[in-house]
Image (cartoon, rainbow, N blue to C red; front, top):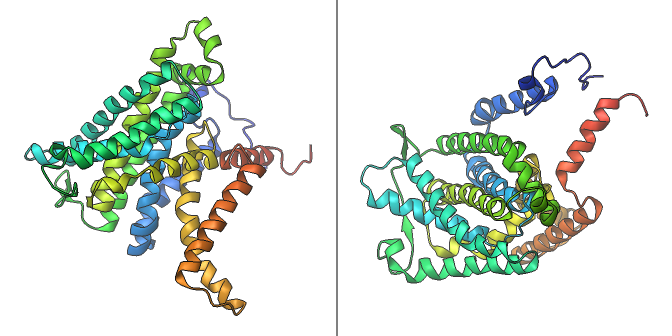
Length: 358
């Protein structure tokens, strides 16, 4: 009887159109945010910040961007790693070439560079779809790898393509400790996730979903496919570009083109599929699954092997981790193809009826 909306009357259109219309949801999200901003910095260790929490926040941000394009607009993309690279190197060029440029404008400019790159490689979506579009966006990945490795202007004439940033500051405060980096990434994620949630609930979000469900019918009722698809590529690329800049500036500090390989494109796509297509909340679930599960398996496998008296090498643990991880992904997609967000939604729906059986 705890999760009911009985008696929660809406007296205005604004109240009826809230992101979280049920009071219990608003309280839960508020408690999660308070714990994330206050409790985690007090309780988590330095290792937890650097190995799990910061990568989780940045991948969640990138997964939100991928979900807008793949989940809400239905445009399959395998170029997410390239968009991250463009955002990272774009922000680096602005940061290094403009003396005294603050970090936040550099991140935004890097996201705008990724937006232009995404629109350019999103043009094939006007003519092709499905697997053909995936191959077209995959070309962006190989083009970005070649561009940042061969065109020395993007790396300030560095022969290897490796660049680095240091002495980062936000509003005059140094961004050096693990806690400060975590809080900065958390603020960026919270702001962009809220904006993305409101965007997909608006008119443009409904246009994206109409294009995803049936683009011909959407065109018949007056939706412009070109505008809808390219706007989805633009918004998605901007968010992924900002995530790439955060990954480079905040997490890595020094990077090269191979830091944004095609592996990241597949990893982000797996996050969206496992978390739930067409769900902002699913992006967080998918990022948590992809980031936490390999680390948990790496810790549990030696313990399980030792419990059964089996000696396993480090290479064997790594191979077993990949096999179990891949098997879990396949099993999960068979059991719940709509992702973790669907399980979350089903659990909430059952709580609305609990303890009654009907």
